[in-house]
Image (tube, rainbow, N blue to C red; front, side):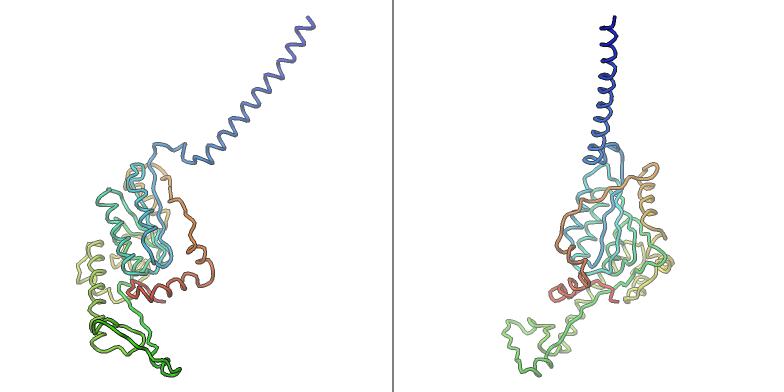
Length: 300
């Protein structure tokens, strides 16, 4: 009897130890599962993607890649563009604009724009490609226009005794050169380019906001508006923050409750690293204007 009693008492701790380690193992597996596969519990559920466009728009490729990453995902029916940008280069702004239109027309995604502190000029150009635009009451937006800033060093070069020598194949090959005065004909030709690019902006706004071209032309003199003013002028749809935009995206695509959010995987970038230094973004912008002078940019 004593032997049987002793074996039973030894079995109890052994059984409890097994239960303890099973529980510990389950907790560890759950923790690792959540860490490695955070969306595992939400498989099969629709969600809203948030793609951020922040700072001067100097290049379009990363944003286009981010948008493209969600284009073929059936579990992402809606994308929110969070725009906090004063604009930038004409070409990259237009490329992102076209990518947003493809999301809507080719991949049938709902795209909502949420404006942050500023979404002006090229930032606003991109926004008009979306289904709906929301802004904070104090968001700076508008600045519908195009600018080209050029410097002239001719007087400085004369003072220091430096002569600029140009060999060219056509009379306008050195147009906008900083080493000679701009002629009236130079200015006329550049103004024609500016007017054409400006008209492209006006037509994009008119199409995206379902407005008459003549009505947009009245606002397209480079002026900026608050979010509240922009709503009154029909340049945006409503006032609201990022969370309001996410909820709207969920409502428009039939997502019940608070939508789950997914963002593009962040990649390391030396440009982002240097943007943390003082004047980092401003310095980058100055560096780009020498070879990309045509800008959809709000100047402050």
